[in-house]
Image 1 (cartoon, rainbow over the protein chains, first blue to last red):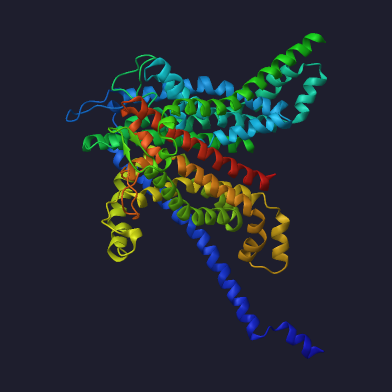
Image 2: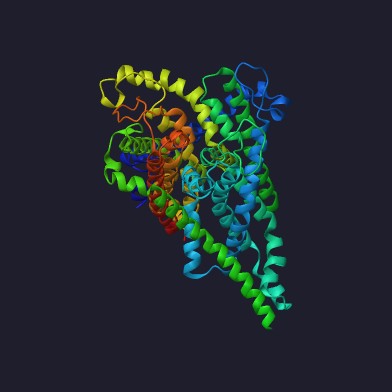
Length: 293
Length: 301
């Protein structure tokens, strides 16, 4: 009896090596998974490092305040492109945020049944449409009828990219508002629309704003949808019906040019763009985490 | 009583209107592109898909080289990014300590936040020279007898395009996979561990099978992104409309030809042909995204 028990407790050699093999496999796979992270962050750090290293020398006040100059002339900057990006993103937000916001409220507050499912699905699928295709869309509906590249068409393109993001984050944030708050308002005799607009929405507002800023950060770096809408320009903003410069567009133009001075400017532009986009997301993220606690 | 109801009607009605606007937008994009592509569709018919000549001067347009470039560069990106992205997701969700998880997930998000044009700039001045000298040069020297690696290593070309796409879709694959893994019930893991499984055996036999279709969805979503990615690829793939078997040779994608030629298109037929390329890109990415969403929703629901 005792002997039998002992035999069953000390595994025979075959079982021991099997166990060892399993442990080795476990270790190997865990190491490989950790290595995957290592491989993934190499390009990230390389990009950030190069942008910093090559972009920093050109970061002078003049970069933000002056127009681009022809090759060979000293100085010059991307002031107009920076202003242009702000205008384009502002336009995109002015068109896209209200639509996304109200659609998101619908999905969260009234969205049951088939229609809501279709809207949700469409929004998700639309967020996967290539941005260059959205650019063509804006070209066909705004540039072709007006017969002119324009800031307006660029704003329309960006708004199409913002709508799905804003609507889905708004939905999520409004859904997070406790039902008791709605019930409390309704119990006090408040009509549904006032409960939504004056109680639910203000409660969800910080989260909704974070979603809007996230959408802004995404589209601020977009180049493809602006190529044949906003088109780019060497001058300051000249009105909504005229072409306008944009930071990503300017970086692209300079990057593919054959001139070293322009390459240097492209790197500085990239540094500014990365700072803008990444800092924005960093702030949103920290803010969201701070609010969760 | 009546007034209250009227206000509610107006409010919910107007939100429905905006919700419908999203569906309308989807339909409008399709309709606008289809309408503008009609002249090219009528002129070339199916020849547009299978033609190998893209000649604006002769007004002859066949997009096979672009289709080939898009498909091969995306496939290459998937082959590279899938194992790494899945590894990242598994590590973050199953192996990493809680303290490590947050910062590392943030780093992956950062990877997704960097604009395409910045990747392109980095691609031109860092990735392309690197590929030309190291993996490209090595492959051309030692494996040059394989058609896949024949010819000189230019740097710009399919390999660089695939690599930069892989970097860009990696965060998509890893973050969606991670969401899917997080949706796997904890009892699956506890059950496997209780039976004496190692951590890896738990992942392999209890977690991954459960999450399989969702992970597949994450990969398909990555594919959707790779197919439509424009700027970075345009800047490193070489933009030559040829079908070369070698990964070291320059190529061209559907999105790149749009980025490069749209503003220079002089004739109406040329513009229409380019819009048809955009229409096809739209239809393909819509189908791919629909498939992906259905797969991911199935697991998370």
